[in-house]
Image 1 (cartoon, rainbow, N blue to C red):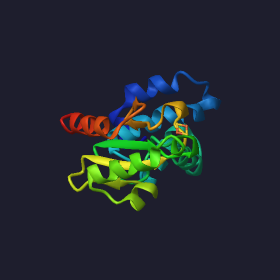
Image 2: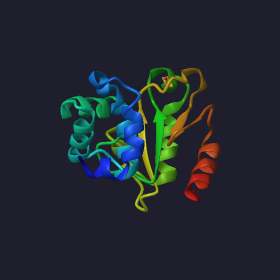
Image 3: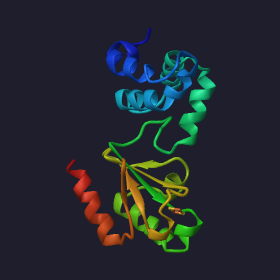
Length: 166
Ligand code: FES
């Protein structure tokens, strides 16, 4: 069927078996998770592969990738650091916190605010994102799948050094 299916047949069959044949589109999210873990990010070819498996149009899968901040349509670093800079977080100091994050990681803030900025060593991609649902705990960020809240610059630096070793 596809390289992704061939490599992860058991896992994919298990996911597809959870949905009736006419509702396979519901499998797009878990299929994208497998695809991104396999390929690193979601290229148009990856999107087509997932669409074929789920029996939907590639544009539908593309829309899912575009909607969720944890799916990437471009290469990213080993760890993705997402700093919320939406209005409630901005009112609680996320802007200077983001400045500090850019300085610590040595990346360009404009890039971080427009699709993400990756460190020269490829270890981190920093991006500012909209609400992550922890508005009362700003400054906050997500590294990969983990949330960190009520952060200080020192705590950011400590976490970066911790993730650098992972
Ligand atoms: S506005 Fe930042 S988490 Fe909601």
